[in-house]
Length: 216
Image (cartoon, rainbow, N blue to C red):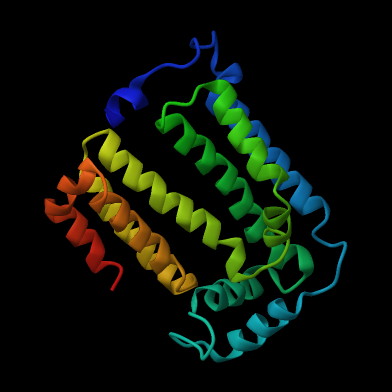
């Protein structure tokens, strides 16, 4: 039933790619990127950015109040391009644009046509939380992208009947654990969703447990 819904074309195919759903989503993603970069230098350093810069002087596999990924990213940015506001906030802006694109791709995989993909992309663009989260270099800049990426892999595995995507889902969760531990709640919600639906059959697939090894 799920795969039938995914394959349903809700709108007619556009004449060319530039007016297709992915193209419209790409335009919104680029718009978000430009907006974030345009205001990247309007305000001074966020206290968390200064904290991560300080942590970058003492690289480790974990810290008392957060995992190490954001510190590694901050240190890498500092070594490559310095610690200016634009340098620190480029990657969060790119993560925001990628979130718009991933949201459009997820909507398309669920059967949404051009209008649905565009609406979903605009919703991400206009969300105040995302506008703030992608304006500073913190864990929150990358968490929504990782959650959406995990959901996208799960949808691909179920809709396309291709269990290898469960492995990719596990890899995304593993990277997410290096960013913020709260992704475990999202992974648990996917497992619960499988248990409560006919998709529970996927719990017998070895790939989903192979992906789980990346989470540990």
